[in-house]
Amino acid sequence: MNFLQFFVWGSWLISLGSYMAGQLGFSGLQIGSVYSTMGIASVFMPGLLGIVADRWVNAERVYAAAHLIGACAMVAAANVTDFSTFYSLMLLNSLFYMPSLGLSNSVCYNVLSRRQFDVVKAFPPIRVWGTVGFIVAMWAVDLLGWTQSNNQLYVSAGAGLFLAGYALTVPPSPPFLDETRRKTLMSSLGLDAFVLLKNRNTALFFIFSLLLGAALQITNAFGGPFLNDFNATYPDSFGVQHPNLLLSISQLSETFFILLIPFFLTRFGIRKVILFSIIAWVLRFGLFGLGNPADKLYLLVLSMIIYGMAFDFFNISGSLYVEKMAEPKIRSSAQGLFIIMTNGFGAIIGGYGSGWVVDHFTSADGIRDWLSIWFTFAGYALALAILFLLVFRGRQIDTKPVTSPS
Image 1 (cartoon, one colour):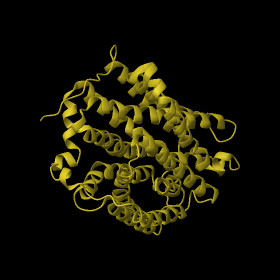
Image 2 (cartoon, rainbow, N blue to C red):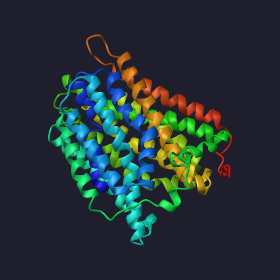
Image 3 (cartoon, helix red, strand yellow):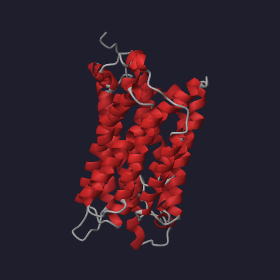
Image 4 (spheres, rainbow, N blue to C red):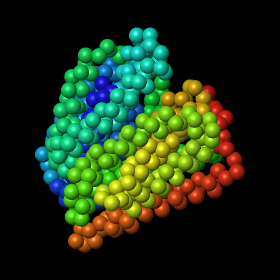
């Protein structure tokens, strides 16, 4: 289930920008706005479908329905070329795919708990198959030559339909009525965690979560179009011929840097680890600007490797920081707020903001100045690093839990 969950996403997430730019002729802002649909969905849909699964309908059935609707939206999107209809269908897909990420975890936790497995030990080896599924999907789309084709959407839809059917065969995950009926709507949506914002340092941390969340969407949306634009100068290069294979090094890097997090947190502390992440984003974008898929391919490969530090050191370390700051009874809500800031509002800002930057450095005849584009993004990350140093200069981030109102 985890393999298919991320196979559905990996089929298009990295290569859809290439299809929209190369085949549909969408502008940078239009491409960014399509990617921002995931942020819009992440703000409220996980909470809403979570309420349904918590109170009324088995989680695996809600999960199956979400993938069924998402797959139908993908099939429809594969058959349209105008921006407004394509955007609407991708928004519909995001509205039901993004909450499926949390539902997938809920179903897994429920099954493991009911079978009396140690969830802490048993879940990570299961979850790693999600990363494997994402990479396999990227490679499949690349090797089949579909990185600029609507076939990638059909691949995603087919996997989603299969997963919807498979989800109905897993052990049931019924609502926990006695617990959830006592929850308020605010609690179910994760809004009671806003009490954390009363702490100055924690409030600043969530602001940086939003600003760094914006960085993630940039290479998701424009990594493919960037490599495709080298077709005129380096048509036979590896990066142009197999852009998804090159970009998949980023996902492989993630699995490596996840293993390094305990060492870095113990040795340097969470403040420095987050700073390392921000600096890694500077290098990620800067190396993209300096590299090319021919004689400077090594710079692009280095950028892919650095991505693991940029992504994992903030997302996972940030989640651990939130865990330390929140008392147990608002733990889930606090993690939900972290996701809303990074994958929600951050993704929206990143999608629209990066699209505007790309359009700003695109000439009237459609030539993109990628050096200026990537250096602008690198400058954005550098400004965040400097601001982070100034805000937290000379002290560690507080780790005393914030108490919620009783």
